[in-house]
Length: 187
Image 1 (cartoon, rainbow, N blue to C red):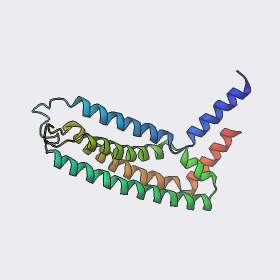
Image 2: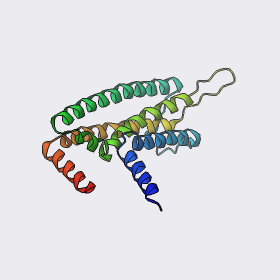
Image 3: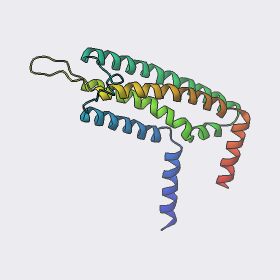
Image 4: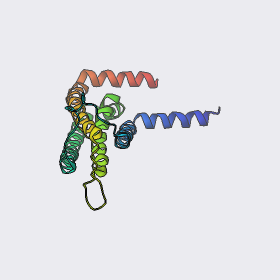
């Protein structure tokens, strides 16, 4: 292999590793796939799971999914805004390298991806809900609705984790240690 190919591969790997969109994009894609799978599969629910699975009608499903999706849009916007402000302050106070180090951090990318994935999942399930009408049978994907509730709970847990992680990440000792490790890696 020539040095040009190796260098190009290194640049691509570093760009993907340092981007804030790649891993969250994969998670959003997985959430969309999960929504399609649960909508298409819609298995018969056994009596054991009956109390846990969503039991409402089409209008109730729309209301729940619309509320979750609207809340997630606001939530994601707030989380991204606060994150950008915190990173801006950290990078001006410590070093611009602090921003790059944060962007490469998978423990920050996963929660952001799950937040966006929950939004996309809810929108996809919302589009599949049908009310009964002339020639149309009501369709409420009960398992997919339950999946939306599970994703909201996962998002809440990851939000607490994310806040703790960001708070720990901007501590002086952590920033200096990460920048030092990154410098040694480059050398």
